[in-house]
Length: 285
Image (tube, rainbow, N blue to C red; front, side, top):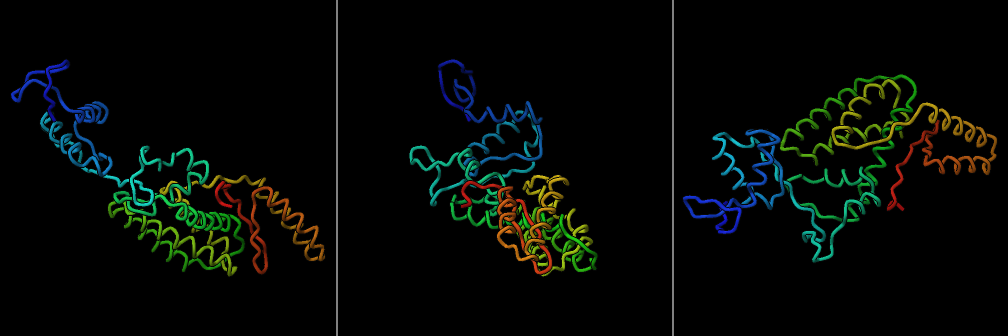
């Protein structure tokens, strides 16, 4: 907390001439911008001692008030169990990962573990999260394309269960791993219903708000698709289905290829075809 020094800047103190250690920078910035007392202070687990210990000691000595109410210490990102460092040449830049995987896959990767625990960077984990992300995209489009009416009691019960599990997880020291489990519990059920053709518009309407709420809290982003684009894609699908009924399979395949060039993947169910607009992920090949 106190560095002995005769060089300027330096001050006399009961312990000898010197100046505060670097920990004073964070106390100064916190008090200036957040006030003498604030809710949450974050930082890496490697800063618990001595940095945060010293911050508390000097800040509370100065203000005579409690410093931060909650301390949230994050784990380090490692590669093959080792800390990232320039000297080891094992650093993966944010720019590199964003270009290759996109922000949604990075978020899923980080949310899979607890914020306070170390997390090991792995290309395999990113690939697994691409599969999960495709499930989320599929769920989103199945919801907006759902048709018909049906009973909603069972889905309302599931939504309530997922909502309670999601909230409980986040209230448990921000346990995003369990929150994701609740989110994917809903996603998988919607995709199952779509596959078995029991997903209806009435079920979709009571589900969309919860789905989008989970998605927004987790920071996962699916670009909104315009009604004109939806209508255009649906028209192409109807044309493809008509050609298939006429056994003009070569022409139908050309339309499928045209739709694929738009970034659209068709999902053929027994009685109808739905679709999803897939996010372009460079490393998903």
